[in-house]
Image (cartoon, rainbow, N blue to C red):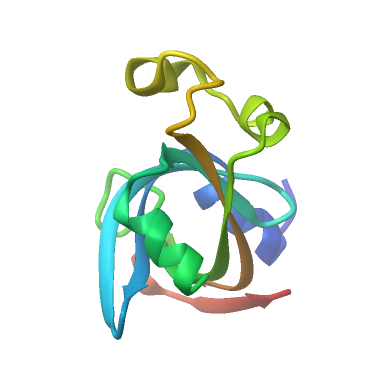
Length: 140
């Protein structure tokens, strides 16, 4: 295999479902929590959550988010830091598009009104290589 592009290296860390630390703004204070987010090649991350959750309220007031995803099992494994704008979607088409069977334990069905989809569009991603050996920045 040849040398991977920065985008390929980033997607190796954030592509597919991963536990991610997601920070939103609660007024002027940051608020962080873990969410399972699925990363896609167009550099968006998507997760399901409850409409009544505080992060939904926070995103509707201020869409600016910071997300961190660590790829691995070893402390030295690569990770990414992401700057993104988050948007809350409660339309049935988006909810069906991103529905995951693991959501059933929380929401039972896709048309549950408390199930919403959060879509985070990355504007900047900082990739930290293995053993912190490198740091590269992708910008939209």
